[in-house]
Each structure stands twice: as C-alpha cells, then as structure tokens.
Image (tube, rainbow, N blue to C red; front, side, top):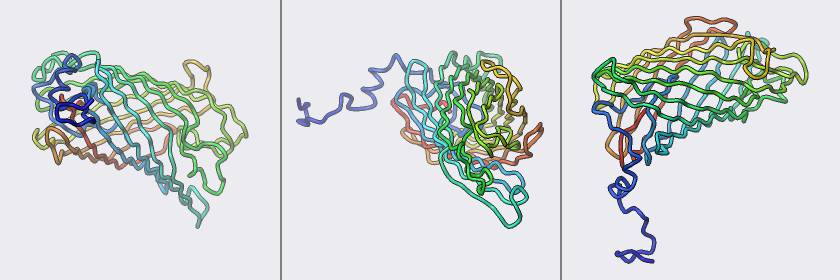
Length: 329
C-alpha cells in the first residue's frame, strides 16, 4: 500500500526520531563526558555500541623482527544489537615477507592471503557510574570470542620458508573481562581473558605460535596450551571536540604447557610483554558520521621463547551514528 505521499516504497521508519521513539527501551545511558576517540589497539572497551549504530575499522600491525615482516590487517565490523549486546567480526588480511638470515643468502619469500576469522559477542554488565569520580562504578563487560582457522596452515611450500602460513590451524574459544573507567580528562582500560586452542593436525614446516619453532614431523597432532591474554591502557584526552589525545598501552600473552580441555600441550610455551605509546585524533566528525585515526608502535619489554618484535600500528574507524548517536569505542 502506498503511504500518504503516494510512494509504495516507504520504509516503516521515516526518520531517526521515529526509530528512537520505537527503540527507546533499548537506548544505552549517555555519559555526560565521553568523547569520540580512536581508543587503544589491543585493549577492548567495555561499552557496547547502541542499537542502530555501527562502525568499520581497518587495522594494520607490522610485526617486525630481523629480516621478517608479518603485516596483519584485520577488518573489524561492529554492530550494536540492543539489550547491551554488540557483535564484532574481524576478517584479517595477511602479508608475510621473510629474508636472510631466516632464508638462504640471496633468497626471500613473500605471501598474501586471508588469516583466521574472529567473531566476538560482547555483553555489557554495568555502566560507568560517574565519569568525574575515580572510585565510582566502572563499565564492565564480558566478551565471548571464537576463531575459525580460515588462514592457510597446511601443504606449505618449502620454498616460501613459512611465509605462506597465514593461520595456526585451530578453532579457538575465548572469554574475556573488560573494564573501562572515565575520570575526566582520562580513561582507563583493562582486558583479561583466557583462550582455549583446540587440537589440530599440521605438517612439516608449520610454525608454532611462538613464531620461532618449526614442526618437522608429518601429520603432527598438535595441542597448544591455554593462552592467557592481558592488556590495559591509560588515555589522556587533550581536546574533546577533536578526540585528540595520547595513550600508553601494555599488552601481553602467555601460552602454558597445559590445555584446559585437551591435556598436556606438545607445542612450545611462550610469553611476552609489549609497551605501546599511541596518538589519536578525530576528523571529520558530526552527529551522523565520524572518522577516528590512531597510530603507535609496540615495543618489546620481555619475551620468553618469542622473537624480539617491534610493531608499528595504525587504524582508522568509520563510524555511523544511529538514532542514539554516541560510540562506545
């Protein structure tokens, strides 16, 4: 049936105001101080996107060690579902390059493809009680994560010196606790979680998660240990209109010799800790659309059976405000 204007193609909602009225019960609490910023790279935020809002965020991380470059470019899509829920998907593109001394003199290899796909459902439990009081209730959330081994990890070409390996071959499940506290003009972030990596069968030349050891056994039944993930960040917002500021972030992983569900691990354990200074700015920005920019570098502080890696990083976020505006990132 045509609407009052005579058009048979009118949508049920004619404006954001109509939509906001119908979905008012799903609207999140709006904080009196919560500028639109890029946020940290490794630490998630505890606030979810409001229903009707979404953003697309390409990342770039270049994990660089001597004569090795592993450029990871996850493409993140985050959608607010309402009821304090958010769905995130990450489709990573990978570009690997390796040269001497990791390869014979005069030889190098490079390879481009899709890595492991990552899905996340985030459930916000509490909201920030008061953005001016440091001891008020912070925002707290749980996230439930799942990885699919879409990146190549079998039938590796010896002439590519493991550059053609784009994934670790395992289905992974993870649970994380996320915390964020606003204390104008600062923000504090924390994320801690555990990842269970399911067993997989890998071949000769497969590089284990420590990025050093190679498997030399055909049809090797691999069991990775549990992976502890921890990250946190301090953010100082210098200008709220431009979302301009700086961050200091830490990030670490520790893979044990034991798997929570699958017993003793036969993949090598490892651990590392990085420290990352970062800067951020928002431009352009209005109520319907904004773009945030972030850049930084992760520097090695500690590593055990893991390469000394320097990691330049960059991100840009294209954010589309729904009727409730306000991004949680």
